[in-house]
Each structure stands twice: as structure tokens, then as C-alpha cells.
Image (tube, rainbow, N blue to C red; front, side, top):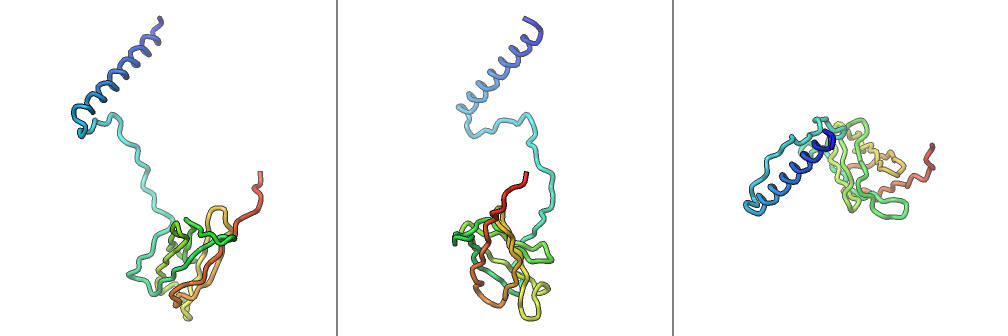
Length: 148
């Protein structure tokens, strides 16, 4: 046996010993956490592109339903106010609730929003923020072929 074979044998037996010791420790004291040998990797903190608006400083709240071509709700679509980074995502039922600050409302109470989602063609809309329930918004499926 060469030197590397001995090292592999030693590392393998050490690993086997550690695994058996940890399983024995788990049987003796199941609530005692094992010490971590390596620190957990944490992603560096990066600010998100979008920020969720709060209802406290909202002059109006628009809420509605986003559906696809066939009328099924679109989950995870982004609904954001144009000219800002204020956005919300649609829930699993396709509904959104978007608080609109006064500075993004026009004189007539309209707000310009953009709807988009993966696999869908984005839509730019102008909604009347004074209405309690918005009309059902449709996101058409993007049927364009992928280019090599």
C-alpha cells in the first residue's frame, strides 16, 4: 500500500468513528446539538431591488386578481408602481394588494403599474386607485420561441 492508500484508510475510519459517535450521542441525549465543525455559509447581504410598500403611508390601496389567457390565476407575478421600486407579488390565488403612496397618484386618482411574470408578456396599465376592486388583469402567456 502506498502512502495515499493509508491516508484514505485513516480518513475513512475516522469518518466511520465520527458517524458512530454522533449516532450514539443522539441516542443518549437527543436534544443536545452537535458542535458544528465548519461555519455555515451565509450569503452576503444585498438589498432587494423591490421594496414592499406599507399601508400606513398609502393614499390608496389597489387590489385585484391577475389571470393568464385561459383564466387561471397567476401566482408569483410582480405588480409594481412605475417610476418606483414599490412592488408586491401575487399570492397563490393570483390576488395582489398594492398600497399606493400619494406621490404616485395622478390628479384623477390613477396609478401607473407594470405587471410581469416569468413566462408571461409584461403589461403596462393605468388603474383607477379610487376603485375598491380592480378589474381582472390578464397576463398573456409568452409564446415566442427561444432563440439559440
